[in-house]
Length: 233
Length: 123
Image (cartoon, rainbow over all chains, first blue to last red; front, side):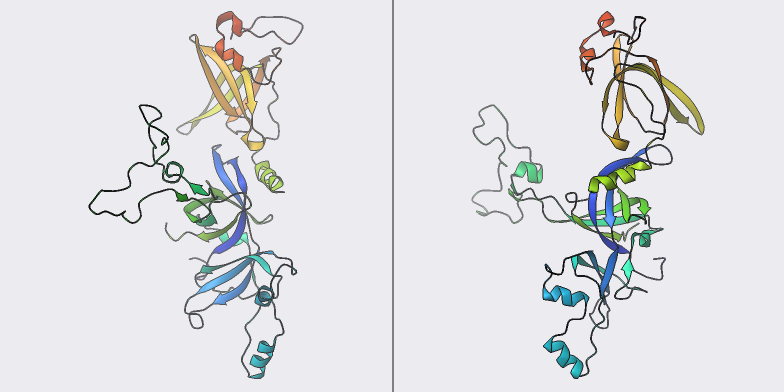
């Protein structure tokens, strides 16, 4: 990593897809992400927490909707316990002193010069070629094997009765007399964490906090995403 | 709101002088073609039969007959590779998509010209 060993990641939202033309006139399919600015809520250190990470918060949450715990996460709240602890001489954790956040995630890696309360913006991705984008895929509910596992189903005619979209056989007979684990069957499809790796950064718009990545990103428009510098080249 | 952001992103890819033509026009589409490091202009002539999409995704379809075989090409309106679109002739049409031309051949493909003189269109 170029920037003195600092983790490069940000939280954002998927805005939607479009296409733009690059310098050679080729049209490029891009996903527009609104990325940051994110407050650094906490910094995990290997001494204190056993691992290194940066906890980021994206988008303000109205205080009336935030729980006391969430408000206490970002700013100092007086409580009996905190009074007791400060009376006992325990140093309180640094707080970001910002509004409660809607979307809070940790990004593993050394914090470098990032402190609690500092801002992470898209320009952190300056000079980064590719990113990994983590999102929650679109939920498809309880889906059949054809949609979920791309099974072929059965024939439309030739005597097939009422099982045109069935999955067919699922295993052997008397031996082993049971189903093997992990056999592909109908079930909940989508609405799961999904990562797309090595997506090229097409453009960084620091003024409008926009990040344009080539190709599709999991999840619906408006869905929250985590964008990290990809770890493989 | 998100649509505004998309528009903002597309702004940089839009042409300042958008080629002006209408459905039913016979046009010359000048496309830039890179051969090695040499650039060359290729012209595709035909009737604009459809226009679709918005913003930087806007496309138009040009149809012509080559060796009694219909050929259609779809171009992005805002592509930098489209040098210019020249209107040769305007046709009288009453719909936005001229897909009915696909079923026609020969003389039936002609469109009435939209000016005083009623010259005939070959293709």
